Image (cartoon, rainbow, N blue to C red):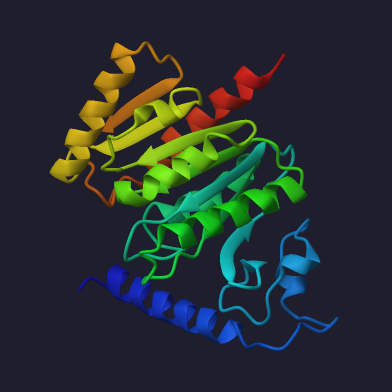
Length: 257
């Protein structure tokens, strides 16, 4: 096991342990030391008690929904909700962490959901996304982008159907092996990023999506193939950030009157 994977596994176990304990944690006092470490603009009610990661907030108490929040630097452009891959966590050092920490510098608030490792329940995943969407609505983040990294299709489908109904929504797919019911996303802007050395099911699904979009004349769909990149984009983090940031800028330009 590489040092990077070992480090990520330790962080994941610690974060999961906190999530279990948080269900019985006492209510926060007015002198919560965590609140002082939050970036400006973080709602006080969203700060959870003694998180291992200072960015951690509680989106909902019961059942608990946790996320890592990074508020945007002004001028604020919208919010990106990140769903990490299976067997990962909300601060996974490849793809997820670099994006969630970098995008706020360019006006995008990031909410990285903490999806429990045992979460095979699609309804639970939907409730987590709904909680994130509710947070965005409460904080007047009107432009919402859902970023999905590598999750399986059976969980993606209902999430996409939910997101496509949200106001001013858009979608970023990164190394996703999903090709069913593409009509759910034909009316929203979509960025589709894959590595040329990704898993074969991912490459096959990406090819199908591109052909389907071309066949149906969907103009707000863009697929990018990163040469030499594998499923984890090792050595390509800068390219991932550059591609995502550039595409988000096109959303901002298109929204201008």
